[in-house]
Image (cartoon, rainbow, N blue to C red):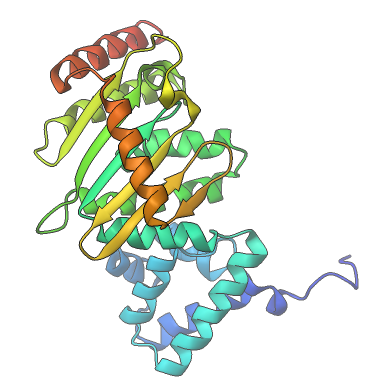
Length: 282
Protein backbone atom coordinates (compact mmCIF):
# COMPACT_ATOMS: atom_id res chain seq x y z
CA UNK A 1 0.00 0.00 0.00
CA UNK A 2 1.30 3.45 -0.89
CA UNK A 3 2.34 5.69 1.97
CA UNK A 4 -0.13 8.39 2.90
CA UNK A 5 2.71 10.87 2.47
CA UNK A 6 3.43 9.79 -1.13
CA UNK A 7 2.55 12.42 -3.72
CA UNK A 8 -0.65 11.81 -5.63
CA UNK A 9 0.00 11.19 -9.35
CA UNK A 10 -1.82 14.36 -10.38
CA UNK A 11 0.54 16.38 -8.18
CA UNK A 12 3.77 15.05 -9.71
CA UNK A 13 4.79 17.71 -12.29
CA UNK A 14 5.94 15.25 -14.98
CA UNK A 15 2.74 13.20 -14.69
CA UNK A 16 0.57 16.30 -14.67
CA UNK A 17 2.41 17.67 -17.70
CA UNK A 18 2.01 14.37 -19.55
CA UNK A 19 -1.71 14.24 -18.80
CA UNK A 20 -2.24 17.78 -20.10
CA UNK A 21 -0.16 17.13 -23.22
CA UNK A 22 -2.13 13.96 -23.94
CA UNK A 23 -5.40 15.90 -23.72
CA UNK A 24 -3.94 18.60 -25.94
CA UNK A 25 -3.00 15.95 -28.53
CA UNK A 26 -6.43 14.36 -28.45
CA UNK A 27 -8.22 17.72 -28.69
CA UNK A 28 -6.05 18.57 -31.70
CA UNK A 29 -7.33 15.43 -33.48
CA UNK A 30 -4.13 13.44 -33.39
CA UNK A 31 -5.89 10.13 -32.71
CA UNK A 32 -2.76 8.16 -31.82
CA UNK A 33 0.61 8.77 -30.24
CA UNK A 34 2.21 7.54 -33.46
CA UNK A 35 0.41 10.24 -35.46
CA UNK A 36 1.87 13.02 -33.33
CA UNK A 37 5.24 11.28 -33.17
CA UNK A 38 5.43 11.31 -36.96
CA UNK A 39 4.59 15.02 -36.98
CA UNK A 40 7.28 15.80 -34.39
CA UNK A 41 9.87 13.36 -35.79
CA UNK A 42 10.08 11.39 -32.55
CA UNK A 43 9.11 7.81 -31.78
CA UNK A 44 5.74 6.54 -30.61
CA UNK A 45 7.55 5.31 -27.50
CA UNK A 46 8.82 8.83 -26.82
CA UNK A 47 5.29 10.26 -26.94
CA UNK A 48 4.05 7.44 -24.70
CA UNK A 49 6.71 8.09 -22.07
CA UNK A 50 6.00 11.81 -22.04
CA UNK A 51 2.24 11.31 -21.72
CA UNK A 52 2.64 8.87 -18.84
CA UNK A 53 5.11 11.10 -17.00
CA UNK A 54 8.04 8.71 -17.37
CA UNK A 55 9.98 11.31 -19.33
CA UNK A 56 10.07 15.11 -19.46
CA UNK A 57 10.26 16.18 -23.12
CA UNK A 58 13.15 18.22 -24.45
CA UNK A 59 12.18 21.87 -24.77
CA UNK A 60 12.28 21.86 -28.56
CA UNK A 61 9.93 18.86 -28.58
CA UNK A 62 7.59 20.62 -26.13
CA UNK A 63 7.44 23.74 -28.30
CA UNK A 64 6.88 21.68 -31.45
CA UNK A 65 4.11 19.78 -29.62
CA UNK A 66 2.40 23.05 -28.67
CA UNK A 67 2.70 24.34 -32.24
CA UNK A 68 1.40 21.13 -33.81
CA UNK A 69 -1.59 21.07 -31.47
CA UNK A 70 -2.26 24.80 -31.90
CA UNK A 71 -2.15 25.51 -28.19
CA UNK A 72 -3.69 28.76 -27.05
CA UNK A 73 -1.45 31.41 -25.53
CA UNK A 74 -2.91 30.62 -22.12
CA UNK A 75 -2.25 26.88 -22.52
CA UNK A 76 1.22 27.54 -23.88
CA UNK A 77 2.18 29.68 -20.87
CA UNK A 78 0.75 27.17 -18.41
CA UNK A 79 2.38 24.11 -19.99
CA UNK A 80 5.73 25.84 -20.37
CA UNK A 81 5.68 26.74 -16.68
CA UNK A 82 4.66 23.18 -15.80
CA UNK A 83 7.50 21.85 -17.97
CA UNK A 84 9.94 23.97 -15.96
CA UNK A 85 8.63 22.51 -12.71
CA UNK A 86 8.95 19.00 -14.13
CA UNK A 87 12.55 19.67 -15.19
CA UNK A 88 13.40 20.99 -11.73
CA UNK A 89 11.86 17.93 -10.10
CA UNK A 90 13.83 15.61 -12.39
CA UNK A 91 17.08 17.57 -12.16
CA UNK A 92 16.59 19.11 -15.58
CA UNK A 93 19.02 20.94 -17.82
CA UNK A 94 20.66 23.92 -16.12
CA UNK A 95 19.73 27.39 -17.35
CA UNK A 96 23.30 28.15 -18.45
CA UNK A 97 23.36 25.01 -20.61
CA UNK A 98 20.08 26.06 -22.24
CA UNK A 99 21.69 29.44 -22.92
CA UNK A 100 24.66 27.65 -24.51
CA UNK A 101 22.27 25.59 -26.68
CA UNK A 102 20.59 28.80 -27.86
CA UNK A 103 23.88 30.47 -28.77
CA UNK A 104 25.24 27.28 -30.33
CA UNK A 105 22.18 27.07 -32.59
CA UNK A 106 22.75 30.63 -33.83
CA UNK A 107 26.54 30.44 -34.13
CA UNK A 108 28.46 30.94 -37.35
CA UNK A 109 31.61 29.33 -35.97
CA UNK A 110 32.29 26.66 -33.37
CA UNK A 111 35.75 25.96 -31.97
CA UNK A 112 35.87 22.66 -30.09
CA UNK A 113 38.74 21.36 -27.99
CA UNK A 114 38.13 17.75 -26.91
CA UNK A 115 40.47 16.05 -24.46
CA UNK A 116 38.97 12.75 -23.24
CA UNK A 117 35.79 12.33 -25.27
CA UNK A 118 34.52 13.25 -28.72
CA UNK A 119 32.82 16.64 -29.02
CA UNK A 120 29.06 16.25 -28.59
CA UNK A 121 28.40 17.94 -31.93
CA UNK A 122 30.30 15.14 -33.71
CA UNK A 123 29.12 12.13 -31.73
CA UNK A 124 27.10 9.22 -33.06
CA UNK A 125 23.94 8.40 -31.16
CA UNK A 126 25.45 5.10 -30.01
CA UNK A 127 28.52 6.86 -28.60
CA UNK A 128 26.40 9.53 -26.87
CA UNK A 129 24.09 6.89 -25.40
CA UNK A 130 27.03 4.87 -24.06
CA UNK A 131 28.49 8.02 -22.49
CA UNK A 132 25.26 8.90 -20.70
CA UNK A 133 24.78 5.35 -19.47
CA UNK A 134 28.36 5.26 -18.22
CA UNK A 135 27.65 8.52 -16.41
CA UNK A 136 24.94 6.83 -14.34
CA UNK A 137 21.74 7.76 -16.17
CA UNK A 138 18.98 5.18 -16.52
CA UNK A 139 18.14 3.97 -20.01
CA UNK A 140 15.19 6.32 -20.58
CA UNK A 141 17.06 9.43 -19.47
CA UNK A 142 20.17 8.44 -21.41
CA UNK A 143 18.11 7.88 -24.56
CA UNK A 144 16.43 11.27 -24.15
CA UNK A 145 19.74 13.07 -23.69
CA UNK A 146 21.25 11.24 -26.69
CA UNK A 147 18.28 12.34 -28.81
CA UNK A 148 18.77 15.95 -27.69
CA UNK A 149 22.41 15.71 -28.71
CA UNK A 150 21.46 14.39 -32.14
CA UNK A 151 18.95 17.18 -32.72
CA UNK A 152 21.62 19.75 -31.85
CA UNK A 153 23.67 18.47 -34.78
CA UNK A 154 21.16 19.91 -37.24
CA UNK A 155 23.29 23.07 -37.29
CA UNK A 156 25.94 21.09 -39.18
CA UNK A 157 23.69 20.18 -42.08
CA UNK A 158 20.20 21.67 -42.08
CA UNK A 159 20.85 25.41 -42.34
CA UNK A 160 21.28 27.27 -45.65
CA UNK A 161 24.67 28.36 -44.31
CA UNK A 162 25.77 25.56 -41.94
CA UNK A 163 27.93 26.43 -38.95
CA UNK A 164 31.68 26.16 -39.57
CA UNK A 165 33.30 23.82 -37.08
CA UNK A 166 36.95 23.50 -36.17
CA UNK A 167 37.37 20.52 -33.85
CA UNK A 168 40.74 19.76 -32.30
CA UNK A 169 40.75 16.36 -30.59
CA UNK A 170 43.44 14.89 -28.36
CA UNK A 171 44.66 11.47 -29.51
CA UNK A 172 43.62 10.01 -26.15
CA UNK A 173 39.95 10.42 -27.14
CA UNK A 174 40.50 8.09 -30.11
CA UNK A 175 41.51 5.29 -27.76
CA UNK A 176 39.35 6.06 -24.71
CA UNK A 177 36.75 3.32 -24.82
CA UNK A 178 33.12 4.43 -24.68
CA UNK A 179 30.73 1.52 -25.12
CA UNK A 180 31.89 -1.41 -27.21
CA UNK A 181 34.65 -1.57 -29.84
CA UNK A 182 31.84 -1.46 -32.42
CA UNK A 183 30.64 1.83 -30.93
CA UNK A 184 34.16 3.24 -31.15
CA UNK A 185 34.56 2.11 -34.76
CA UNK A 186 31.29 3.73 -35.70
CA UNK A 187 32.28 6.94 -33.94
CA UNK A 188 35.68 7.15 -35.62
CA UNK A 189 34.20 6.38 -39.02
CA UNK A 190 31.76 9.21 -38.36
CA UNK A 191 34.71 11.55 -37.75
CA UNK A 192 36.20 10.57 -41.11
CA UNK A 193 32.88 11.20 -42.83
CA UNK A 194 32.41 14.60 -41.21
CA UNK A 195 36.00 15.62 -41.91
CA UNK A 196 35.22 15.53 -45.64
CA UNK A 197 32.50 18.17 -45.32
CA UNK A 198 33.55 21.69 -46.41
CA UNK A 199 32.27 23.29 -43.18
CA UNK A 200 34.05 20.92 -40.78
CA UNK A 201 37.76 20.74 -39.97
CA UNK A 202 38.94 17.94 -37.67
CA UNK A 203 42.51 17.85 -36.40
CA UNK A 204 44.15 15.54 -33.88
CA UNK A 205 46.83 16.41 -31.33
CA UNK A 206 49.24 13.52 -30.73
CA UNK A 207 49.61 12.24 -27.18
CA UNK A 208 53.17 13.50 -26.62
CA UNK A 209 52.80 14.55 -22.99
CA UNK A 210 51.69 17.63 -21.13
CA UNK A 211 50.99 20.92 -22.88
CA UNK A 212 48.68 23.87 -22.29
CA UNK A 213 45.59 22.08 -23.61
CA UNK A 214 45.75 19.44 -20.88
CA UNK A 215 44.10 21.87 -18.45
CA UNK A 216 40.66 20.95 -19.76
CA UNK A 217 38.26 20.76 -22.69
CA UNK A 218 36.22 23.76 -23.81
CA UNK A 219 34.04 25.02 -26.64
CA UNK A 220 33.55 28.49 -28.13
CA UNK A 221 30.56 29.67 -30.17
CA UNK A 222 30.91 32.83 -32.26
CA UNK A 223 28.75 34.68 -34.75
CA UNK A 224 27.19 37.96 -35.84
CA UNK A 225 23.98 37.31 -33.86
CA UNK A 226 25.55 36.20 -30.56
CA UNK A 227 28.29 37.28 -28.19
CA UNK A 228 31.37 35.08 -28.19
CA UNK A 229 30.36 32.32 -25.77
CA UNK A 230 32.69 30.00 -23.87
CA UNK A 231 31.64 26.65 -22.43
CA UNK A 232 34.26 25.22 -20.07
CA UNK A 233 34.16 21.45 -19.54
CA UNK A 234 37.08 20.77 -17.23
CA UNK A 235 35.79 19.99 -13.75
CA UNK A 236 32.37 21.63 -13.63
CA UNK A 237 30.48 22.95 -16.65
CA UNK A 238 30.54 26.74 -16.80
CA UNK A 239 29.42 29.17 -19.49
CA UNK A 240 30.78 32.69 -19.98
CA UNK A 241 29.96 35.54 -22.35
CA UNK A 242 32.58 37.85 -20.89
CA UNK A 243 34.45 39.37 -23.82
CA UNK A 244 37.88 39.35 -22.18
CA UNK A 245 37.60 35.74 -21.05
CA UNK A 246 36.31 34.44 -24.39
CA UNK A 247 39.06 36.26 -26.28
CA UNK A 248 41.65 34.57 -24.06
CA UNK A 249 39.99 31.22 -24.77
CA UNK A 250 40.09 31.84 -28.52
CA UNK A 251 43.82 32.63 -28.27
CA UNK A 252 44.37 29.46 -26.25
CA UNK A 253 42.44 27.43 -28.82
CA UNK A 254 44.71 28.68 -31.59
CA UNK A 255 47.76 27.83 -29.46
CA UNK A 256 46.42 24.30 -28.94
CA UNK A 257 45.71 24.01 -32.65
CA UNK A 258 49.37 24.75 -33.27
CA UNK A 259 50.17 21.33 -31.78
CA UNK A 260 47.69 19.55 -34.06
CA UNK A 261 48.36 17.45 -37.13
CA UNK A 262 47.08 18.56 -40.51
CA UNK A 263 43.57 17.47 -41.48
CA UNK A 264 44.92 14.74 -43.77
CA UNK A 265 47.44 13.44 -41.24
CA UNK A 266 44.67 13.48 -38.64
CA UNK A 267 42.52 11.30 -40.88
CA UNK A 268 45.41 8.84 -41.16
CA UNK A 269 45.68 8.68 -37.36
CA UNK A 270 41.92 8.11 -37.06
CA UNK A 271 42.14 5.25 -39.56
CA UNK A 272 44.92 3.67 -37.49
CA UNK A 273 42.68 3.90 -34.41
CA UNK A 274 39.84 2.25 -36.31
CA UNK A 275 42.06 -0.69 -37.20
CA UNK A 276 43.10 -1.00 -33.56
CA UNK A 277 39.47 -1.13 -32.43
CA UNK A 278 38.68 -3.70 -35.11
CA UNK A 279 41.37 -5.87 -33.62
CA UNK A 280 39.49 -5.79 -30.29
CA UNK A 281 36.20 -6.99 -31.72
CA UNK A 282 35.01 -10.37 -30.48
